[in-house]
Image (tube, rainbow, N blue to C red):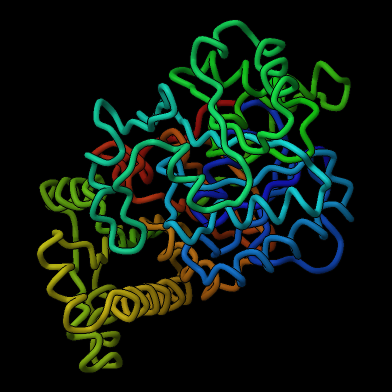
Amino acid sequence: MILGVIADDFTGATDVASMLVRAGMSTVQVIGVPVGDAPTADAVVVALKSRTAPRDQAVDESLRALRWLKQGGARQIYFKYCSTFDSTDEGNIGPVGDALMAALDATQTIACPALPENGRTIFKGHLFVGDALLSDSSMRDHPLTPMRDANLVHVLQAQTPRTVGLTAYNTVGLGAKAIQAQWAQHPQTHWWVVDAIDNAALATIAQACADLPLITAGSGVALGLPKVYEQRGWLTRNAQAAQLDTLQGRALVLSGSCSSQTLAQVAQWIERQLPAYQLDPLLIHADPEQTFQQALVWLSGQPETALIYASAQQETVQRVQKKLGATHAGELVETMLARLAKAAVAQGVNRIVVAGGETSGAVVQALNVQQLRIGHSIAPGVPWTQAVDRPLQLALKSGNFGGVDFFFEALHTKAPAT
């Protein structure tokens, strides 16, 4: 193992894994805090469900994953979080990063959630989503981690007692040595938010991070790491790294995300007049078994790929959360979609697209998937994956990722030739 990755949710794990595979690193994703021997791969990604977990739990699980990765031989550690830096003033990005730094005796690390090809860029320390500041995007009203400050130095400094500084775009433009020189001149600054407006900047940042024990970032910086490892003689790139089995038959789309992009994807599916069934969290709360049986009867009657979704507009989500509570409402939906995934696989479904990080975690756990091989990307940050022990493929999509026709494209576009 060259790189050990700790991801704070399941879709984020497949996101960073897809970047590594795309650059020629064989990559395996493991689910939850692992035990036993590490799999044989250039990179191993541990997918946790710690993004919105209680802070102490997130820290504990991350440290346990770190110990396992180091025992497996990982030469560098990467803490992966969302490209929209999902967190609150209490964490969990700062506390987990601080704990990992302490465990690795690391004196400095970076914070760089940029993913320019998905519209996430950092300029003068401010995170943009497309042309809008993060604080003006739909993330402003996220039900669990509302992001109302686009200044990442401010956001991160609220989560850590360590000093946070900025490596601005003009320093990045001077190259990796200039970045390293800035860090060396300010040893008392432990966290560096790093500007990145394009993939060239990410490649430069990866070079600058070559000797850091710990990198914390979104998936973008991972794009540049394989070249660094190749230059050091650690890696021989594998052109077949993304190859999975060819599976046929029925597929299923499950959507628990209420992001604006997922809502557009659901609407596009329905506009294509493809089978779709909407779940109501209030009905799930009132009678979960009846709701499950009704959805399952409907699904069993569909001769082709179908969509089951709980995605809804913001006003509907707020109304439900007011009655049930945000956490309980989310858990009801996740549990129902996970049960339906398990039932669908029992009926012969072998490909499932899942929208939403929390929903993806629930589905993977319900299906008892322990490890995933990473395949080709459907869209930036969203690859097909396959369970290592059976013919079951999953595409785990972060709510805001993919174009409006993502669901259809995922199931009808052939993998590129290898």
